[in-house]
Length: 247
Ligand code: ATP
Image (cartoon, rainbow, N blue to C red; front, side, top):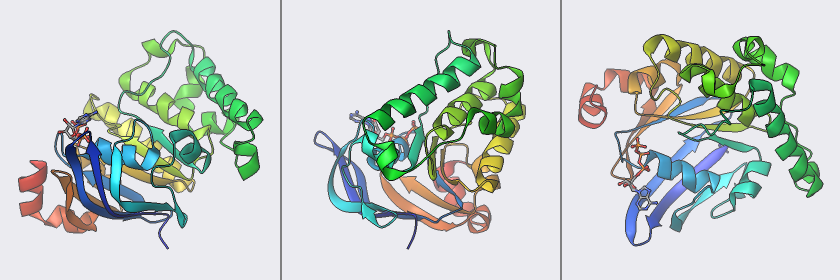
């Protein structure tokens, strides 16, 4: 059984048919990449999984740890151990790094008092563990988040997600808008998190960067999967790369 199994889903925004008969799996412990051009349907796929601003999934199923989570609301999906870091990062620019992290904890505890997290017995990373994984954030804990570099802001967004119980981390274009040198820093952070045991679904337009870290990759075009293989197979498949990824 895969950690996440998406089986032939069709998803719509209103009457627009966006995701078409899409199937993919994410195996426990791996970094799986979902690649594709602008508007291919990557973010929409993540929304189907996370339940955040979800499209209407009219056909097919999504299973997580064997449990059907199709159409389950975002707060319940999150309690089950799936965390999404959205494209726009959503950190609080006027709060310090430490305050941003603390806030993630407060939200977590709040869900505990609602009897959600506790009843599942899950726990996210402590602040100390977060600083161990992200020494850069430790150095800058008193700095206002809005003044961090783009890469540091991305790390903070990932760190916040990890403060929730996370077995599967969904990263939506973490390299977007970052300079190559900074991308390397975020890559290192993603690798560390993966080594520590978190499964990662990495959604990217930057195929070259994503393939470097990924074990396996899917390519999506017009809402459907057009390639499925190991990262090495995609690297060797010039036609797919040129046709669907422009690299
Ligand atoms: P990008 O890399 O630009 O973020 P993407 O692969 O993540 O692209 P999606 O955001 O999933 O693409 O969009 C897929 C298609 O769905 C696009 O044609 C987009 O215009 C459309 N779409 C996205 N959100 C909505 C919405 N709320 N209502 C209607 N159509 C939408």
